[in-house]
Amino acid sequence: MAKRYLTVVAAVLLVCACHQQKNCGRIIATEQVIAVSPQPDSIYLYTPGIVEGFDGRFVVAVDYGGPGTYALDGPKSDFGDYKAGNQIRVLLSDDKGRTWRETPARIPMMHEILFKAGKSLYMVGHSGRLLATRSDDNGETWSEPSVLCPEPRWHQSCTAVDIYDGKVTLVYEKWVADGHKWPGVGPVLMQAGVDADLTQPSNWKFSELYDPDADLEAARPSGIPVVPPGEPGILETNVVRMNDRTSSFYDSTGRSLVLMCRAHLGVPEIGVMLRGYEREDGSLAIGRLPRKDGEVYFVHIPGADLKFYVLYDPQMQLYWLLHSQTDGRMNARRRLALSYSPDLLRWTFAGLVAVGPTDHSARHYATMILDGDDLCIVSRSGDERARTAHDGDIVTFHRVRNFRSLVY
Image 1 (cartoon, rainbow, N blue to C red):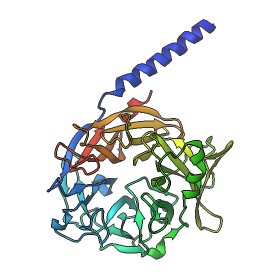
Image 2: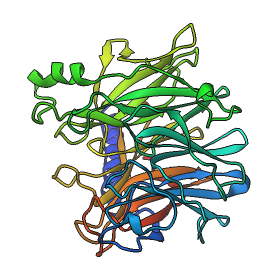
Image 3: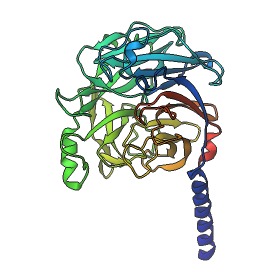
Image 4: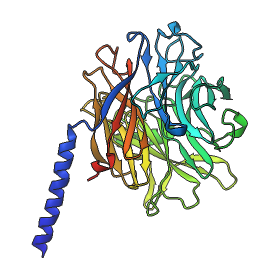
């Protein structure tokens, strides 16, 4: 009996190993270029966001930056990646991503988070000041950005937003102190009712800034982080709800969320997890994430030395992670990968979404949505004309068909 059991176990492990090996170098998604820089040497296409709007429309926002943006028509942000400022542009598809058109929108902000709430589409971004804009016509036109917080400086990327029980919750990040080295930011939890006007600051409540410096410094004697003093940080935070009732992260009251952060440590595949929660009095707070055997802080998250994106699939009750795959170097941006987990802690590699044609042709900083049995993805990308892996010149759209079949 024992021999038969071991034989079965060995067979299962062999099947899993073969499946993983088969997916290791196989591209699991289609690729389509949907936006191209007019000047690849000086205008860069930064992180895109995607959301399914109303009536099945796909809406994509693209952050244009670089020293050449002064030549773009329309307004630019006061604060930008370069002195010329940044500009958000919007693309629409009414045929599930087969064709795209650019709207006339020229939105003067950067680092957008794109989402749907109530009867409108929203972007939260910044121009030094924290801003928000709204579309009431399914992405065609957008309101003049309103100021949610006049205090500079802010930072983020297009990361996961939680919408639950009539509330939208997200994280934007605020600079810890003037003169702090990059990435000297800390997460701020934000929450509002989905049916409120989210361009109005009075409809939002904010937590205090969570300053990560003390926790990072306390970890230094252990060898994490290993970067020089003053440079470690956490940023580009995803807001994720734990749906597994057996997890120690699960909160039956619905008030607690898991905040999954990129960790700028000089160590690949390591991220940070925090707890975002609503107190009994309704105020918001961020703190350590408790579990039965203590607290969670540093955790293994594939690709967490760069921006990643987390999406929950209720059908299979799995979390899907869109991330950069390390190739032995820090900040490797060429290979875009997909992994999955039942609990946000144990990750299994599912396959490669895309690989850039050269080292400086990235596929990274991507965002995704569910579309039935498929995943639809937009990536900050580059071709052979891209200035660097960081400063790409195209945005690509990818579809992973029957993505649940990748589970083994």
